[in-house]
Amino acid sequence: MKTFISLTILFITASFITAHAQSVQLYLAIIKVKNNTSHKGILQRVDSNNVVINSEKGLETIPSEFIKSIKIRVPKKSYKLKNFTPDTDKNTNYRQNAEGKFVDEWGNEEPSLTDIKDGAIASVLGNILINSVALPVSKINPSISNFKIDYDKTRYTSQLNELSYYSIYYQANPDTTAELRKLKEISLIHQ
Image (cartoon, rainbow, N blue to C red; front, side):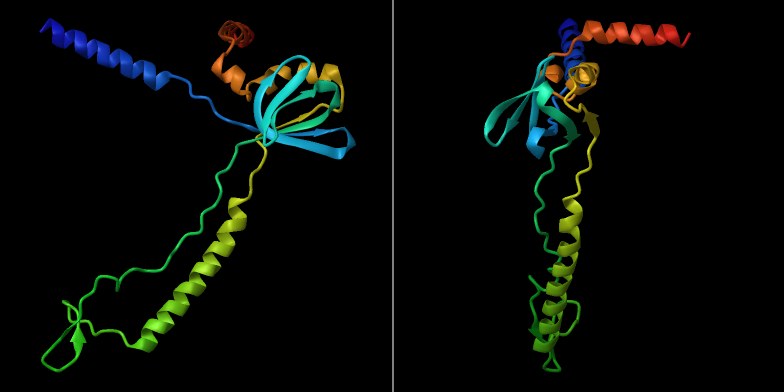
């Protein structure tokens, strides 16, 4: 009985820990810099002098004094075309009845070649129409947060805490004591 209780407590504890474990969310950073160029990549780390992103070129370190603005977005998966063609006649077996007509097991007549052709044309046109509307809609990716730095180090420093929440490094290694201190300050203000 003690073993059963111990295993139950262990299972509940393990379930509680894994349920509350924080997963790291990837955020896409679009950083506009001097000369109207931009860098795009996953936000890795933010410190008082630099922003580090993981782009197609590899890790890029961008000094804060070169940054005009930073947009944070959630990376989207690429859209896969979908097939909306009905599969109703795929596995239907037709047999000849007493009247000499080919029918399925429910008595429905076998469609003629013109019916099949018309249905195929309609389904192809439907697929083209639906996918041509869904593809551009899937490309919409609004920013979650915008940071206007304007090459100003003090403005960058004032937004550093909020910006760091989106970095992989901060999510993996949060500063819990600083967060608890902020919560305590907020609770004291609202009393």
